Length: 192
Image (tube, rainbow, N blue to C red; front, side, top):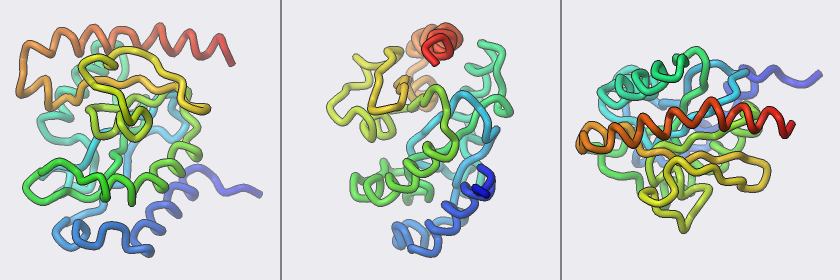
């Protein structure tokens, strides 16, 4: 009998710790921030790396970026219980620096296992770091809000909520991109 999704995800989390992925990051982090949400969700949201609040709680997107993400989800009648949220890098980089390519590379096999286990209809990447795991040559300013098919995955790159915090003029663009999600999901469901 196959393992249930929750058990499979727990095994991936255990494997990250057992295989000592990114030991330098693990040493400075308080928690491994693995992921949270509905394991049967149609939408998987992938951020970049945990920040200070995420590291303290072990939960993804709980700081200011998380509040903006919740607001954007709410604008399309969704909440955290309707999606699954994770990051490409599962430990907080010191001083919230950008994740290094080597760190993303080390975590990518585990992220791919998460995607296989969750089997979402739509993968939403937040920010350029998670987008470039699937679309290595894409530029977020050009790719945001557009649907890409990468192997079997439907990838929708969106701006990271932090971008909307630092650049308030982006918020309207982010809102419009989020408003596309229900129609994109409806299209994907039709194809199935």
